Length: 303
Image 1 (cartoon, one colour):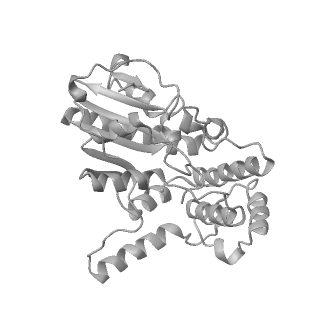
Image 2 (tube, rainbow, N blue to C red):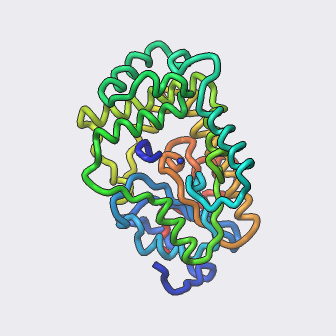
């Protein structure tokens, strides 16, 4: 979601269990993808303030999985590399975060510039703090500034951190679409200028919606009703951003699920909810690319 800056149970023999097709009346949307004895669980998550999203059904699915897949590796990790290697990586990241020979405002579409300046004035972001940044990185600077002035009334719980910690405790392998921050920065910086400008506009639309009081369903995903307005807005208003963020990345995940099913065993994927929704979400991609048939894709299975 926009705000975020990228129970062990007894063993249950899923392979011998008949999966019911009854839909859950409560709990997040998730999918079971099956091929033979192989299976992959896919959870799309959003904002959380506790662990109420981690229902007994999801706990069982997670317990049965031998590996966890997430989008981006944690920013803080054990780093035993020598100082020269770490400095070289830091220099690479700095270059990916900053413009060369032009400013942040040069890249923005003209209609977006005054909206950014209005937000800067409200949140105290100075010209000097942002003008050298590439739009993809300015997005996070502006987003943090906004939330520093609009603190939530609860302590946010990062779902991916919860899953990562449990995976460590249970001895699961942990894997990522983008293992390091350098991988993430490289991917974001490679987006076309127009898509990066649209990334800023998409953020501004979200902020405008929140400030107007129209957005109040942060936690609806936890009871199986994830909001789609933000995704629909990206798809209809910002096609270049949508193509980069949704079809391209979701196709990567569909291919990865195909690989996991070919390897055997059980995997658990936790991913931002926008990637499982809409006409180009991961479930749709799996069917479109014939990774599995409809009979092999179960939404909200009752385990």
